[in-house]
Image 1 (cartoon, helix red, strand yellow):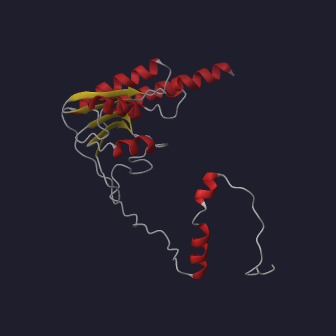
Image 2 (spheres, rainbow, N blue to C red):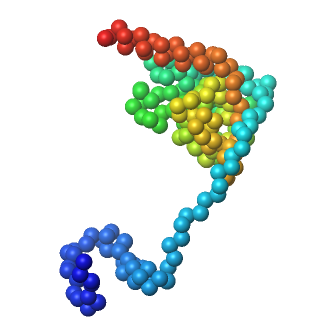
Image 3 (cartoon, helix red, strand yellow):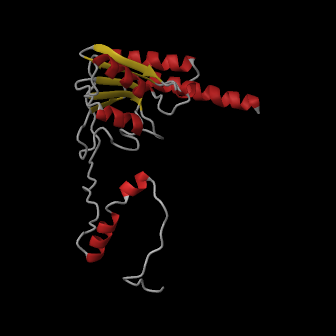
Length: 215
């Protein structure tokens, strides 16, 4: 490759848009600083992954009633031919948000039960954060939903059965209990698990049978 001559004229790249011009205003100066070695490019630092065993909280007397409400939402999803997952959010013993899966109906990957319940809850309280809130969901939240619940600063998340394919709280990740995160929630699992599992099994069994009949 021919070395660049210090005083050789550079070709005119043509007119730039205003956005491109603004973005590149400081590029020459930074390029010269990098060449001179005045800026260090340091690798990103990360804390070691030392999660330890996953711990769950104790089931409380009110958890059974909360999960029954979530199961009602899951049955409503089943009636709409949606994957039967439901969720409710309680604060000081009062329901402030509820929802069930509407992914197919709304044609949206965001229409998960927990996100819909969370949207209703923040609309009720008028606040983006829900300290002290308890979330009841029939299935372990996915990474998306767990992340949203973490941002909302909920206190507890109670679910019926795990989701081995997408679960972000215990199955595939620990979004809500990772010690490196700035918020952690108490987790409880197994409340009315048999009912939550049966809803899912019946739904997917019917889908498989329908697929066989159409062959």
